[in-house]
Image 1 (cartoon, rainbow, N blue to C red):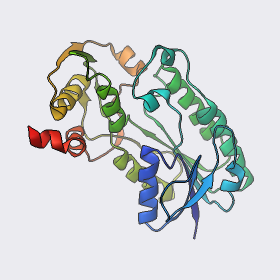
Image 2 (cartoon, rainbow, N blue to C red; image 1 turned 60 degrees about the vertical axis):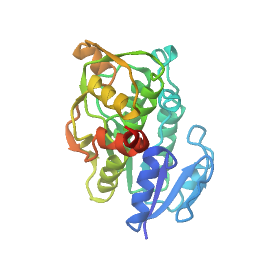
Image 3 (cartoon, helix red, strand yellow; image 1 turned 30 degrees about the vertical axis):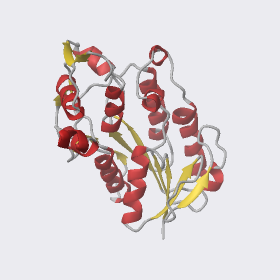
Image 4 (cartoon, rainbow, N blue to C red; image 1 turned 30 degrees about the horizontal axis):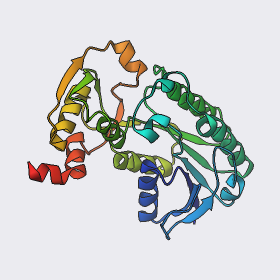
Length: 270
């Protein structure tokens, strides 16, 4: 049976991808800095940022799903001034380049890379790093696919939670369509095994929603009493910050339904 290696397999999206692969009967090896709790996958221990353990992890692998990334904003759940000036590239650029080179050495048959919608217009350093890594994939001799996704609900939840202490939330009015990792994982696994290659349909959430409405739904789901201050944002600035509406596949889980699952106790108390 073919063996699939998942990098980033312990992250939010990676866990969803691994779950679907195992559910569908695929052999799975997860590349991570430390082993997880699942006993129905193989664990390959190493670090994409340094390359430690990577060659060994690729032995016997037919397909790689590269869901690994390093976003300081996502890790801390908020933006700091430094994020407008630099973002680490050891995982997303150097790590991707190293991974692609080793994939070619061992004749991996398919390299599926998870990326982000709207990178060409985005100006944040993390987006530039992601675009550089994606371009390496597109130039690779290994058969590849690129799946771009919109921002994830869990990240928005984390960022909004860091605003919860403020009595007034300044929020742009721009539209976008964030998505849940479960829907992205479904799309990624479909693209991994449908026999097609190259640039695949990008995926976003089912609903085009303004950040103001999104923040309002979050506030209500948390049972908070906060004033939301709408801020006008030009299209160019919105795109520069990654706020776009995706074209392609739409997920099924709405932001409102995700919030109901995330905060059931708050909803029931209300």
